[in-house]
Amino acid sequence: MHPRSVGLIVIAMVCLSLTACDAKPKWEQYEGGIHVVLKAESKGDAVTDTANTAKIADMIGARLKESGVKDKIIRTCKDREVVVQLPPCKNPDMIVHLISYPAILAFKLVDEENPSEGTGKPVPTDDEVLTMKTWDRDTGKLVTKPIVVKQQPVLSGDVVSNVRVRTTTSPGGRDEVYVALEFNSEGAKIFEKVTAENVGKRLAIVVDDTAYSAPVIRERITGGNVSITGGFTLDEAKDLAIVLRVGSFPVRVKVIENKTLDRSIWLGGI
Image 1 (tube, rainbow, N blue to C red):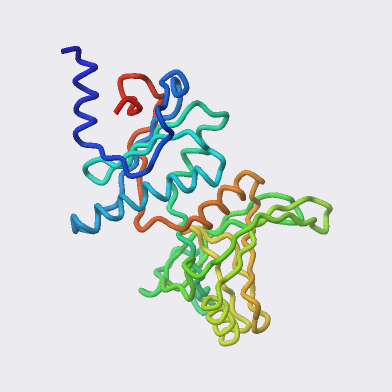
Image 2: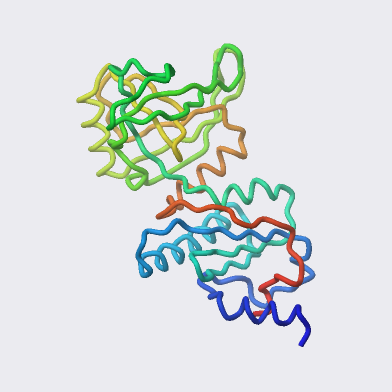
């Protein structure tokens, strides 16, 4: 038997299709495309790990569909792995980013009384130091700096009901892109309560351990609407909106393989 055939048989034995791909995919369409293998974080329980891997595969399919990618092959394999194969595209790095970052959204209060921000001093055990990215409207540049927040979020992405990309014009005349969030009724009530109880404090909007803004709460906020800024390009904002609409992965994932697709590893014939 040809070595290449052996490799395909092995893949067929350990991979299961959990996300439907196009009917009868053709190799000519996928040749030179994207081959990515992602590994999900383990929770120490085989049943939970299997369920999480399956959910991640489904969510990757939903993200790609939202972004307009119609042709795709997605498989779950042993050891919490998800294999994604796509035809060639104009921006493969952005596609890989789209399918690989967890998009865990959280709202966390800034520790206003902690003097250790940016000093290297130890922080309280219930705090954490994150990187904050903000858009300097005067210089038009993206600025990063450390910020100390409470580890426990006051609100999560589970209560977000709608996500849209919006643009506005800064005082300097520059177009700025941001992501507008709308909470469901439960989230709106929690957000109103949190803002009412924390007037004068800052609330950090965090995605995957990066704070994109930390505005001061001036008053009780009703209506359940909030925006995420951070010097996004239009494509970056669209990708963020897609993953927040679909939802965050149940666990974190790591890209363990990313290469150009060739026939020896193609799953379309299975």
